[in-house]
Image 1: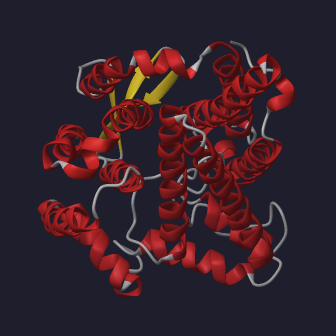
Image 2: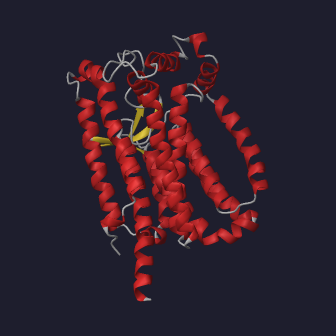
Image 3: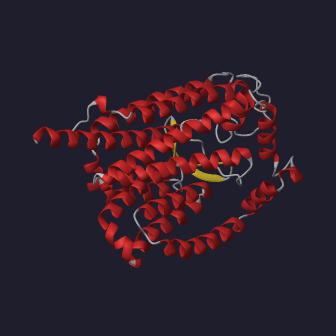
Length: 379
């Protein structure tokens, strides 16, 4: 079944497109000086981001037109081996690429792929099938509850070897959110939550760089030229932005003051150039997108499309959790983590996977509409 293009959810589609266009503008603006200095071409990162955007649109269109969710449901058990293989490949000599002390990327000719982006999508597709098949058991049995937690534990262990603590947090939030919506009793979440908090605390203090991040988060100005440098520069960018910003392209913090200005901290540059008005506009865009995806998932669940619904719920949790964490880190309300801002930050892997996720939500909604329309026609 190939959905008609007229069935595209307009609110979701245009909110995603709007965020993506903002990302293209801001990546270009935030990277002008660093690209000119390092590569003698101020538009290098902007052009590459635009190329990634075109690739993402093509991949997203192909997924929407050619990948029925029924096929993904049949292949759900194959998603876990794909996720594990992606995580293993980062440690293969010649394939794994280390950046800033973390081995998170698979180096291919002409491009690099962040393994955790593949893992997020694969895990959602697997867990949605598990929940749809065992929803009744999840509401009553501890055993059914522990199976996805075991899978999450394996992926968490492998992600921490890279290390990629940010991806672990996103996967954890996604898992708990999907299981909660599946009807798992609240008491189990309280017990697991206590264990998770304890483990998170151990993980946080297990590596010196994580301890430094926590200390710099609590008081970034105590070591503003050391561990707190990135956060203090981000906060300065927000302060300079005031109500309406200093104007597009006029950021000072992107002039080699703010590290990762076009990737993890592109929101801080936007805040400086667009001010409070721009930051609220971007937050509204993410809020609209998240609300619409959750709404589509709720509609699918009410109409009996359980696998479709939990795929959509999982995608909503991934996108919203990652956006919330990135925005929080930029504003200094969360400890620093290496997470991109979906649709906005520079990065091919993030853009492609985000496009695939939106395409799957659009496809799920369109399939439900198509099947219901056929049912009414038969009557």
